Every structure is written in structure tokens, then in C-alpha cells.
Length: 261
Image (cartoon, rainbow, N blue to C red):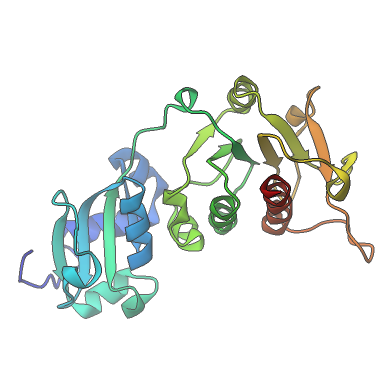
């Protein structure tokens, strides 16, 4: 690790981090993304992502946070003021990283037990929160379809607390996603306000895929095919909807509860 502190925002590594943090197009072009925070970086390493650069605040030691940091990563130290200008959480996140994006998983080679499918998820904070629920409830794949946000948007990574790196994920066209779920012979459950199957009265013990739409418009007609089952979450006090994160949590945990028996 270089002992010299970086002072300038014009340093190429600093500029690259800032660009990746701000621009989806840059992340796609470079095949890289920016990560802030010790736990988030650790989860990325656990998920098999390779570091290109690790940026530490001031004189913080790498051994303090990453005693077995991969040799592929170049380690640099930034002046405190410069570091704090890059980090959303400032000095509370003493490490930043530029990570190498992994190639798209070969989905046809896996066998999936529980899949979360999200259509038109445009808020990165929502997507990140859903990754936390997906990991906690045993999902082994998350798919997005339609016009959906970037998995490596900094707000998604931050909201997921790094769990986005621990659940395999991919963005597919709608028909590709449906073909995959059918090839996997998964029961396909959609979440709808007019669903004919009450969550409290439905047997959910099979391998399954659970499909949710956006909070604004719900699921599209593309998910009304024969063989798909529509779930409805019972609600009291004349409520007719929950937000997306709450709805997904209720359904995914009910599946986990029934299967755990």
C-alpha cells in the first residue's frame, strides 16, 4: 500500500470512483461499480466479487478491516477531507471500493428452490430492501423484468446493506423469465389485489417463484397466464394495499414458515 496520502479530487482513481457512483452508464461501460462501507465490501468479497481499488480514510490500516484482502486490489489512502467528500456516510464509512462486476450467471445451469421476481422496480432503495428480505427468507435467485433499476446503484447497495452481493440475480426480458421459471418446474405465484387465493388459506410448501409488480401500477397482464396462481394478502380496517417491501416480506415469510414445518 502506498504510504502517500492522495489529496486531489483529480486523481484518476478518485475520479473513477466518483463517476461509477454517479452514472449507471459508466458502471456498464467499465464493468465496475462503487461500494461504500465495511460490511458492504465484505459481503461483496464473500459473494466472489474482485476488488480493483480499495480506498481507505487517512491512516486507517487495512488489517483493521480486511486482514485477508485479495492481492488483486490496489490499496490507496485518501486525505480525510477528500474521503469524506466521496463517502455518503463520511467518516462513518472508513473504506470505499471499486469492484469488478461478475459475468451474468448461467441461470440454466442452476436448480432454484425459491425465486423472487420483480417487475418495473424503479426505486433503488426498494430493490435493496427486497434483497435483505430475499436473503432472510431463503430466496436463491432474484430476477428483475421490465424497466427496472440497476443492481449496483449505490442506493440499492446501501439499502441492501450489501446483501445484493449474496443472492444471485439477473435482469431478464419478461418471456425469458417466464420460460426459466417453467423450465425449473416452479409453482408461480403472483401477488394481486384481486387474487383468488388468500395467503392465510393457501398451501405454500412447494418450490416456488413469487412475482411482484411496482407499487404504482402492480403487475402487468403478461403475468396472467394459465397455470399462474394469484395470491391476495388479507387486510383489516378497509386497507387495500401494502407497500412493496412489506407485501413481499409477508408472502416470502409465510412460504418460509410453511416449509419449515
